[in-house]
Amino acid sequence: MTRGMTSFSLSKVFMFFSAIFLLHGLSPLNASVTRNYTFKVALQNVTRLCHTKSMVTVNGQFPGPRIVAREGDRLLIKVINQVPNNISIHWHGIRQLQSGWADGPAYVTQCPIQTGQSYVYNFTIVGQRGTLWWHAHVSWLRASLYGPIIILPMLGTPYPFVKPYKEVPIIFGEWFNGDTEAIINQALQTGGGPNVSDAYTINGLPGPLYNCSAKDTFKLKVKPSKTYLLRLINAALNDELFFSIANHTLTIIDVDAVYVKPFETQTLLIAPGQTTNVLLKTHSKIPNATFYMMARPYVTGQGTFDNSTVAGILEYKDSHVKRLPLFKPTLPSLNDTSFATNFTSRLRSLASGKYPANVPKKIDKRFFFTVGLGTSPCDLKNQTCQGPNGTKFAASISNISFIQPKTALLQAHFFGKSRGIYSPNFPYSPNWFNYTGNPPNNTMVTNGTKLMVLPFNTNVELVLQDTSILGAESHPFHLHGFNFFVVGRGFGNFDMNKDPSKFNLVDPVERNTVGVPSGGWVAIRFLADNPGVWFMHCHLEIHTSWGLKMAWLVLDGKLPNQKLLPPPVDLPKC
Ligand code: C2O
Image (tube, rainbow, N blue to C red; front, top):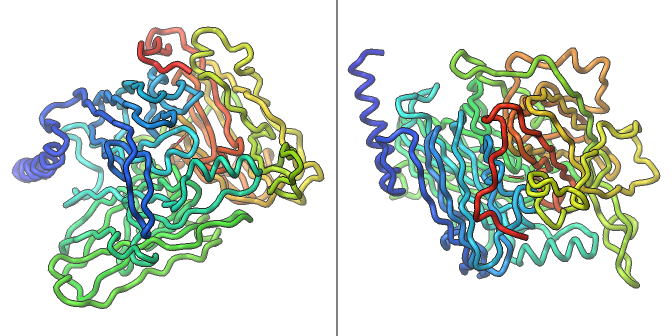
């Protein structure tokens, strides 16, 4: 590349980002700056599908505001709670090196922010660039409290792919006509499955395939012969989604804010918690057509689900003056596990000199956890519960259904007051049974608040094994505080004698949320180099509510930069 071209493209980058930054009051010139945001959590009436409801929002916006920052920046986000609910916000995928107090899951790293109170989340973005997102991390409030986090590369560092003409966040969500807090509370009381959503949304809009919704359609107006960077985020509560744009090919370049080896596809799969950056190259001539972009669920479980489709419209500029034929993409069938498997196996780390895949090679600790649904006894008086055979639905990791403590685990740990709050004895591996075979007679889970303790800098290998106790099901697993490498996956029971020899230690995908295949297993590796208490859970919110969650406690290292810092003075109290 010649000098002239470099300065030309930089000035265009400058112009483009100036536009973004002006919106946010940021200066594009400064590298590594502090960026301040104020998040007022307040009620706001929102209407979709002809239903108006009062929703918990940030700054009255639904979806919530975007955070735009650069790698290396410090973020100070003041969250002010002006609603009756307890609030906490999680910065999903941010590593939070030494800043575990800012991670956000309620009763894990902090007590929630009570009505009328505020808390400043203070953290620095280290070694990450791409798309992440923020969401409430208490009960089901993330149904309406979510938004994108866009992390630009450091100033002067180009993308390792063609420079996009424009960048567009596309955040999928779920709309419920009813109140989501009432829905989850009722489900937990009766023990049955929760009411399903009434629509999926793209940037908060359900689109024309729902009743009374055509005016609430996301439109992407494009120019011919341009490359658009779509930053896709799945913020749906309970559904993995297939996504496709009619007559257009997508190039996957990044997942969970880590670059991957680019590959082309018509359709992609994105689980709750995951992000996917794709390049969309528009046709070279303005076509005589408009195009639907559509998303609908990938479903493996037995229960009811929202079997509907969200659509947005891709429209070439000036083409709207005419009535043009509308093309629809073909999406895989709802239970197309072979599509899911093929798509997932194509994701590989870029593993370049500049963006290496630092896969842990020498493992210090190996763990094997089962994950799946189960039951717990009915505790209703004079009534049967609505779960399987009159019991209550439950879910567990290693057959332990996680009980939320009354105070935050990280506080309990830091101040040496863990007694009665948690025990440091999460089991290494469950009793053997045929995990994916015929279900055992006893489907009851046990309960507890148990943590797995790791010395600083432990190289961890973890196999997550789905169970078929109440039917096999895909579980998008999210680990806080770390990225991990997905070194292996397969169907049936994990075979510790045969399967590890097939692990990919060269260019496995690095991410923060991975699907445990339905009726199968996934093996991940990570380096526990971040002291604190780190939540790990299924990102299907109903499974989290049923107890499919646990936490790791990573101890301090010896050096000053290997220790968790003391909590901020405004850390909320329980
Ligand atoms: Cu995106 Cu623990 O969550």
